[in-house]
Amino acid sequence: MRTVEEYKEALYKMKPNVYIGDEKVGRDDWRIQGGINIIKETYSCAVDPRYEDLCTAISHFTGKKINRFTHIHQSKEDLFKKQRMTRVLCHRVGGCIQRCMGIDALNALSVVTYECDEALGTNYYDRFKKYMIDFQERDLAASCASTDAKGDRSKRPHEQENPGAYVKIIENRDDGIVVRGAKQCITNTTYVDEIVSVPCRFLTPEDSDWAVSFAIPADWDGVKLLSRPAWVHGVQDLPEEFRCPTTELGDVETFIIFDDVFIPKDRVFLNGKETPDATAYGGFLALLFAHYHRHSYTGCKPAISEILASACSMAAEYNNVENAKHVSTKISHLIGTAELVFAAGESSALHSEKSPSGTQIPDEVLTNAGRRLAGENIYEEYKILADITGGIMATLPYLETFTNSEVGELALKYMQRNPKIDPIKALKIVKGIETLGCSDIGGILQVAGLHGGGSPQMETIAMMGRYPMKDLKKVAKYLFGITSKATIFERSENPVTPRELLKRYQKAMKFKQKIKK
Ligand SMILES: Cc1cc2nc3c(=O)[nH]c(=O)nc-3n(C[C@H](O)[C@H](O)[C@H](O)COP(=O)(O)OP(=O)(O)OC[C@H]3O[C@@H](n4cnc5c(N)ncnc54)[C@H](O)[C@@H]3O)c2cc1C
Image (tube, rainbow, N blue to C red; front, side, top):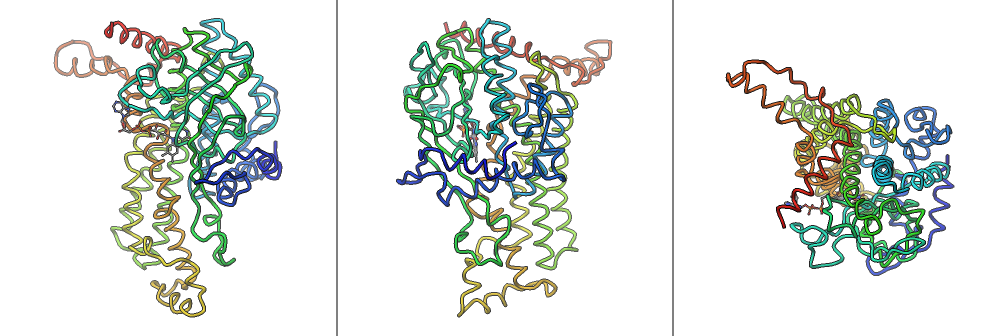
């Protein structure tokens, strides 16, 4: 496994293809360091005895010990551990741990490449396996680029007026493919080694040129990373006494442009232009990436709710209202959501299925139900934080004010509320809450809480696509005297294998085509 220093060294050697505003910068730009400090935790915890069991796994390819963020889940236990690791690491960084997207995409690829080869005789899984072994050996970190620019939302890729709306294969060559297009809203790309690209929606037979998946280094020729960093205000000149984990962290979201990028064959994991029948697997891949990512959310979202609950309890102490009834009622909503979302993830691991590739797939209904509950509650949770803290979380003067020779002491004096909390501690509590709820990073986390892994409607579609509604209806049919025999209905007793799911999807897509004709 890599050390933190080796991770950073590899990063700083990359070609500068990061654009911030009108500047082109390298990975050593200070505005990227906050994100690096987050990924760093995933390397240091893997060798920390307190976290090692959660943060490492044994590779089923090589039998070697690897970082869990490079593991393809082989069992229920693996899924449980991934979820717990995500929760625990998010607690350490006050939000998103940021290394899950890449491995979520790779887990999806392990299933889909295998399925496609079995059905069509392609050789994607072998390529994928070779890539994956190298990924594990080098302990790489990756981003997942799924969300296309998408253009007109009501139209499929081949129907778009803007031909660049979805990443497309523009040329098939003997040694690889050339792709063109853009992916938007992609987390962590400026501080990871690789970009794993997968489609972002169901594809019809006419969308074969858009059925593409590949992995390339993030500084590959023709790749342009238009970046939007977020960091804690004033972090560069912060007095030592105010430095703490939250002040050192940050995030970079990236708008990736693939400007006619050549992808060597051994890095192509799906090519609908070459094998049109493989197009359906593009949609299946989009669905499975979202699925693994939503399962990761059942680890990180509970952590974020817990961080907010913890911050609320600090705020209540600061305001000396800790014993007020409404405060504990409000905090109980945060804890309740955290526990339910985590339970949904655990239960989806319990009811997970082994795919023919050997990769364990979490239960779809439970994962989506949990993820949707988290998304629906996100703004309510921040409302509770603002309610209990008061307006100061949005109006706090910059920290430098409190060390200013003229007004610093005065400012500190008026920060005091609960007489048992000294003003410096009080200031740290408010600054921490400002970072969580009312900063650039806090704003990003709120939208990520809603849209990350797909908009809430997409979770509903995924959930209901799998739900056995016909069987459920039988319960009412018996109760209303329409049938005489009671049905024993237990949703989890009716698993649908991924292969059956794919068949249903293929059928639905053909059906749509017929109607159109
Ligand atoms: C902070 C953050 C980090 C992210 N990180 C990543 C990442 O690392 N990798 C990645 O791939 N993606 C990432 N995303 C993208 C995320 O997955 C998308 O934002 C999400 O899938 C929603 O897509 P969208 O933003 O294009 O919104 P849209 O899909 O355009 O949604 C906007 C609205 O339009 C509706 N809508 C869309 N299409 C239709 C339709 N055909 N019919 C009816 N209604 C429709 C939606 O339901 C929604 O209400 C990130 C997003 C955020 C906010």
